[in-house]
Length: 257
Length: 149
Image 1 (cartoon, rainbow over the protein chains, first blue to last red):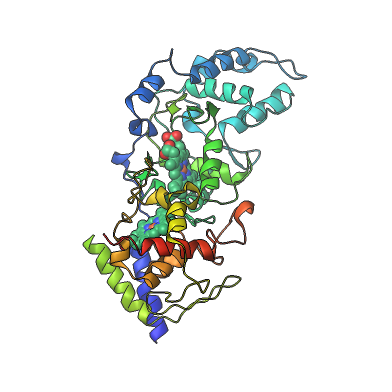
Image 2 (cartoon, each protein chain N blue to C red; image 1 turned 135 degrees about the vertical axis):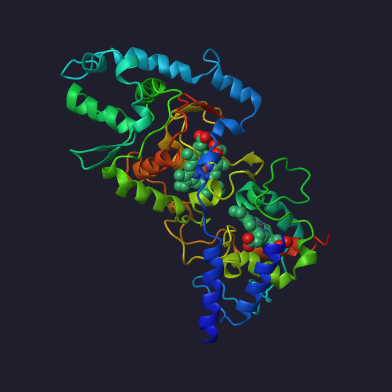
């Protein structure tokens, strides 16, 4: 009886403190937490280092590759037309695979299936460049990912991962990015963890990096075992983050501290 | 703040009725009310080493907390300022807060620094050992009790 009372009280209190999702009207990009210098760097294409990758991507778009000897442009023509709005819908459900793929995954599927070329390594210059070039075609457009009913179970899994405590520090993504996003971790702002700018240039990395790279950094930060690049779990987290960010504008290539 | 005090009071009531828990693979300890009265190592910690540990980024304390650490420009504000914690809590209460804060507040974000069970997907580099050793915890406790105001 004593024990039961104790558990009941503890459970009630734990329930009362559960993570709450950020209301639609309060969504804020990571950019809005940055200092004026970093913001200016993101907003000025001539100062934004991410634009170097976008330019590389533009070149790669028309370069023939693989035994099919085809370039992206041979199937998709002008990316400024054919790729407009595409990134705003990713990760998207792939009917053949029966699971969602993110933009990097889609580009590599095109490489292996249509160009008959070897897939590009995650975080390689080429894959980041092509992804940034494709995503940049959606700059300023609202994110619409996550509507597809086929995606729902994967978005739900991503949500579960987001709210599950893990690692030696026993923290969930939501502990920081839903519950404490207006606070500071060792002096640096914790943002809402919105996926609006990827791939993006992080001054700390001195490079462009993918959303998966960022997720792996946060997972390692809480001293949990990071999922491999391309693993279903990371794509599920991406799918949840994109549906959580619905309506927010794509910023690729963003800049972050 | 008032809400926090209320919750703390509720927990104090709940915990008085809870049986003590024991950690496996770690030095055994006994919880009495909301405290671990006895040192984990059987000896007193070193307050100077404790302060150095708190200020060290790898201990993770100042990711969330701030305190009287003028030399550290980057401190967190997710958690109470550590100034005065020795005035608010006894040595034994501080020890339990470090060993397993979730024992007092299951919803807390403060990690359990001396616990191995109940964790999910701990990374290989950190598996099967607590965040801090018993000695390190005693050093930090010895320092925290000196923070009277």
